[in-house]
Amino acid sequence: MASFATIGRSIDDLGFCVITRFFLKPKQTRAAATGGFFNLEIVKVTSALMKTYNRTPIAFERGEGVRLFTKDNDAYIDFGAGIAVSSLGHGHPTLVNALKDQAEKLWHTSNLYQIPGGETLATRLVEATFADVVFFTNSGAEAVEACIKAIRKYHSSKGAPEKYRVITFEGAFHGRTLATIAAGGKAQYLDGFGPKVDGFDQVPLGDIEAVKAAITDETAGILIEPIQGEGGIRAVSNAFLKDLRQLCDDHGLIFALDEVQSGVGRTGKLFAHEWADVKPDMMAVAKGIGGGFPMGAFLSTNDAASGMVAGVHGTTFGGNPLAMAVGNGVLDVILADGFLEQVRQRGINLKQKLARLADEHSDIIEEVRGVGLFMGIKCKVPNSDVVNAFIDEKLLTVPAGENVVRIIPPLIVSDEELVEAVLKMDRACKKLANKNKLTNEEAK
Ligand SMILES: Cc1ncc(COP(=O)(O)O)c(C=O)c1O
Image (cartoon, rainbow, N blue to C red; front, side, top):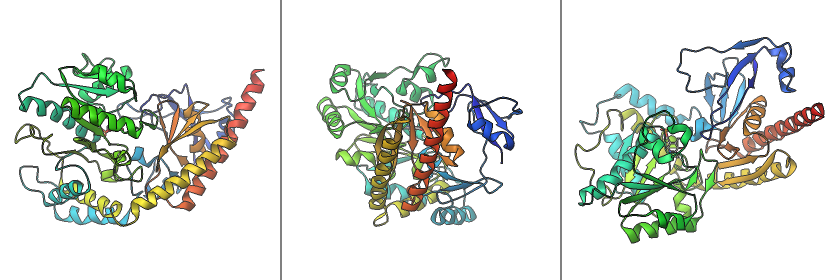
């Protein structure tokens, strides 16, 4: 099995390595682990895929629970869950059977006809949340995009089309469409894509005075992730979410949540905002709701969705029977008695273990943050070094903004698997500390 090294590495806030990666032959692994790049035969990975990602040169062939296996049967523990997507791990029998059953019956009809699985899933989401209605999408960005359109449409359908601006927050990530990069506001993602879509006013996260100051006669709503994922597992206080709700009520604004990453059980509640005991008017959901099948959902109250009438918005694939079968399967498991309680328990266990790890490796880890199984470790060394040291121990995690490594295992993780993963982290941190010590000594 080939190991690898990365050269010229940097990390963007979305959490993907912006690097050139090279394969190293197996016998050279030791040299790479100690940081030596001498006499190494380097084979550049080539691909016909567009170069929007620099992919780690590992390919997985199958998955089982929290584990991923390469063609050579090398097992990795997956504590990245495909960026918070594989909520029930890999090959969960409920999802496999749901997809197989549906695949044998019917794949696609379009939204020109009724889709019973979609009716069921929408009803279940409505019963479990603040929402009255659901629009299914294929991805998170499309769910947020639908949400932004619906915020604007709400006001225009009530005779106030001048209200179209949405307040968003620094560090946010809402997707990669033209509107969602404008909502996220990150210069790096906007650069080179022409004029930024107008209508977003960004303020510092957690600063209620800045939010008040940003409200004008053109403001239509506020859009926020209750816990920023790509931004670095940055949570706002419950009080802040409550204050936003109040501001929206006072000014007739739509209060919209992006729970694409924080939702569907990740924090130990079905949705993260439930911890704050607030109700939004709209919410974007994706990732975990499909457990690995690409799907998303935009949820709304009846009133907030009053502008979303026949013909104003649409999708060819959204709500497709295959996706609906899997989405219902995910809810079968996540809404079963005791499941979310178990996620909360595992979350507490993980947090305690990570806190101990941070104490033991204070030279590597600055802080542990997060809720439930939506955890992050803020690093003192480059987070890419930590992610790669974990990979060397066959543990997968995901980098994020603020030099954080996201620890986001499948929600079905066991206590034993948490122990195993944290032992890998411990070994990785020790090796990293030794490597850094050696490098520092060499530099003297
Ligand atoms: C909070 C949030 N919103 C939106 C998105 C975009 O989702 P997608 O990549 O499925 O378009 C993401 C993706 O990471 C996200 O974390």
